Image (tube, rainbow over all chains, first blue to last red; front, side, top):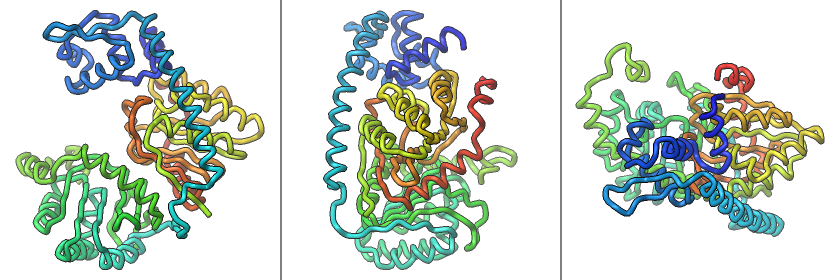
Length: 285
Length: 154
């Protein structure tokens, strides 16, 4: 490892993220800078540089100038590490207190919000998944929330899940969906929008879950479906645990803010046209 | 009866992981972003892992090893953990002890994680949930490469 990598590694050991360490080292090496040249040198966006600078200022490792345009300077290493150390020490004390509180809570068994029995079970095929989902959708009262892989759009259309969702919207229910919208499913997605489903584009696969009426959830950490048939194997978790539902909902709300409106994404895809043969986008589709 | 709770910050997640590791008797599995290992070391989690290994337990872990995090991974190997490297992992992150107690999260940013970040994680001692996480861990483990091999590549 070269000296620079060792230096960065030591900085992350002081609680800095990789980006913070790189930016701080850059300012130390090349002197005070405005965000634009920093973004250029670090091959990132200005917004990203701003976020990292704000975090470094909070940590006492960077100081902004008072004049305009604002120039950012690295605080000298000794002072910076001293303040980082102080912050860590106070966090350690804080965490020890939290740990004692958690242990106390655990002893009192106060985690469970009620005495109802909740269950977890594993679903092993698409057939089983559809069989579990359809009766739940038909008896939904308020809302249905989901984060799905692109392939789910095709499965939903084939197995009547879409129709059940549209019926639910007609009954006054709210359906929110985040999905990785690519060109082949743009039309299906437009169909969701036309039928009153709120849809946003989330470009990351690997995390999939759905929550019915803030109670029943199905999640699949690694649903890598290659063929769309009822007997295709999956590993999904079904539960009616309300705490787990709150956990997934909270995750959903965080990701919802990071996603983009489906209409915007569809317009973008249509403008770009179908993926060209041989491109990565074409292979994915 | 199994129970569960939601954790909402990186700091609380580390405090919970610390409690889980302390109570482990046989085995710990972890699949974590590398920044979590740095935070874990700062708060003594590697010491708890070392104690478990010294009394005959086994610890296996999967993470994304880059040049920046080579030293921290080396420390985990030195205390006797089996560590592997995975590229481009986008699923849930987790720590599971004795096939029962676990903490997992679906929305941890792997690229840039700081101690002050907000995360949403889930703690439970439900063994079915642990089984579900373990299945995911084992898939990642099979696809991952040995940490020492990864060091050579770096």
